[in-house]
Image: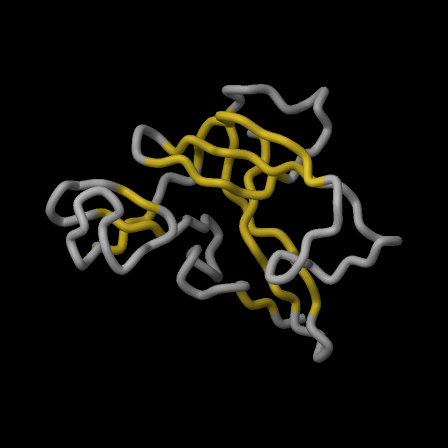
Length: 139
């Protein structure tokens, strides 16, 4: 089966150890995700590509209890949709990113727990191509 990333400039793929692709400002050193054309802190009109740490801590989280709309829909229907976790993950002292979690059980998720970036299936296109996205899983 052919696999492709949902967006080629958001995370490194294919990779045995994928990383999110952020940006670092060459002027003020601010880090942002995703990579933006200008610095969100000082407005410098360029950002250097910066690979973010693969591991982080769960800062806060919730569960997605309803079928998401495009562009976040993964091909589920009301019958097949299963709630999933969404979290804000602190990556080192650089940046917090919002991401899907591989876990959604409130009894398992804990503030401050260590998480690691993984690539997971998102949907399958009509031609059989599997679209993958990133998520964080408990370590």
